Image 1: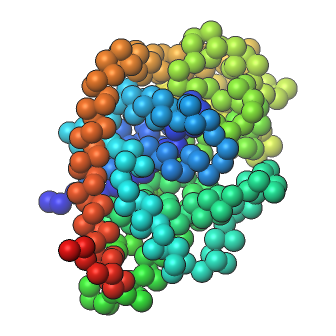
Image 2 (image 1 turned 135 degrees about the horizontal axis):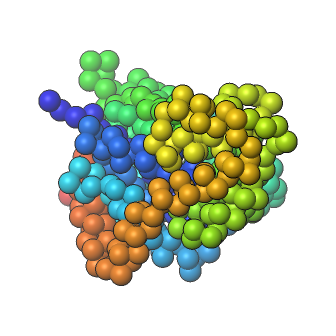
Length: 336
């Protein structure tokens, strides 16, 4: 039986946090044996906002090590760096030429980030959903793991694929596969420790807002001790008036491996002073094996480099096949 192909990527900006892990990477790891997986490091996307050139390459390497430390198995997963495959940028340009501008101008994330950057907003920030479409369609992915905030971008990818197939393909023989979203409701949207209504984010200027995967036990305890709560005794899920309570219980549930019902029963009569140490220790123990594997990999950089070389070769073979099919459909002459 042919496995469905799954593709996703993470930008090498800042440290991975619980939102990245619980919302994406842990799902990749848990389901990797059921699919044919292509997971990449999205370094081209990382430069759509101001970045530190000196840190980009090292952040790319450490993210690859973190992928492996979290449990991705190269026997079932191709791990590669986006910029190592030139077909990503080449296909994005071709998609630019068939994508209406108003499709990009309606993207919610662009509007939000453009406000923050003001006059410094780049064409790349506007255009990165087209590059994202190229990332996905280049590998003819069946499924794309996405959070709720990325569903609009996947819809754009589907629209671009459908438009290209309609204009340049045949109804019975589409050139590009139209992907479907792979959404895991539980833990798909991890919220900030300082505001339960906002997503946990690497771009938040406050370190207190997130727990990074490499935070020390003391850092984790201090962040949880200081995280935003409410004065109500007794903890419960799904109370819209208590977003922080719901978020912290969900994190505890996912990190401790318990069911929602078990956590609800355990914490129903607790105060925050009793719950926070419990949550902190569950977090420390869940992250301990990841941190140990990560440090071992960083002591053996040759192993990570070999994984990325192997991933580049495997990804490039697939990418070039799709790129050539697109170029043929567009009418480009083949190199002599």
